[in-house]
Image (cartoon, rainbow over all chains, first blue to last red; front, top):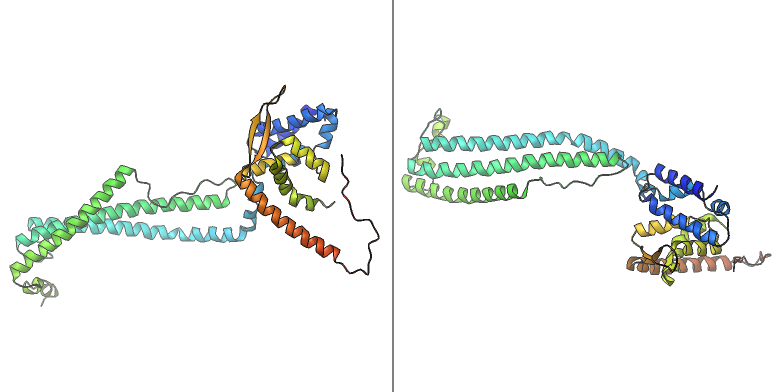
Length: 238
Length: 120
């Protein structure tokens, strides 16, 4: 085998092993030939003294240093199956997100009823309108808070489904992709808007709750105003 | 000599050579091929692996009348690794040497101690 034949065989072998920077490696061996030829060896002698092209290419193969992975086979397979079963948990997470949305909607409806004085099948207890307004605002804030929580939880669940899928793919794949972050991928503006809304709603909730309580307590002339207006007794039909 | 012995210390030998000074790939290859009799061309994958691990870096240097040569130099990580590995190996080799020379004298050595033949 002369120099060109050896280098061609080496290139083929490197390509078969998907070795990156093959040209750089070939240049190194070309230089090896150049030095040896300058020392008076023939191309055939140099090629004969070099290790076989496929052996050299195998040493460059990118899969080479990742051998410990194979030893973990059983553990990985177990985890793979376990995370597959765990995927069912995402359904529960989505159900919880839907429950949060429903709670937000309920709070908004009650708030609307309080503002408009709508009885809604007698479920809304009677109270002076001056107290109903702050309570309605309070529930509106709660609805906003729950909506933000539901949105975040929904996005976080979706993202974690992806994280899990990526991990499961990497566990089997030869060339792993980078792992994903667990937190929801909101754009910076969206994240700022959601955080601002949540903070505002939380503050509004606290302030209107206190105001509503004070107004109702003053109207009833008692701290436990719900006893004065018999809110819970009528519900039991007493 | 047992090929497994060489394989284990080849990294250390390359680090030691580069610790003495920057060398190009062929120099390292020739030095090791002459002294510890490894197949030609097997040092280059090793140099690349060391580079991938961040123990050595490369730079091109113009030689008078010839293409630029790729030189290999130890990085700081390479120097640190060399010092620890060297100390580990010397302690290990000394322990083995003591063990092998402290053998009971009932079986006196009939052969001359093994000597590496050197190509000068």
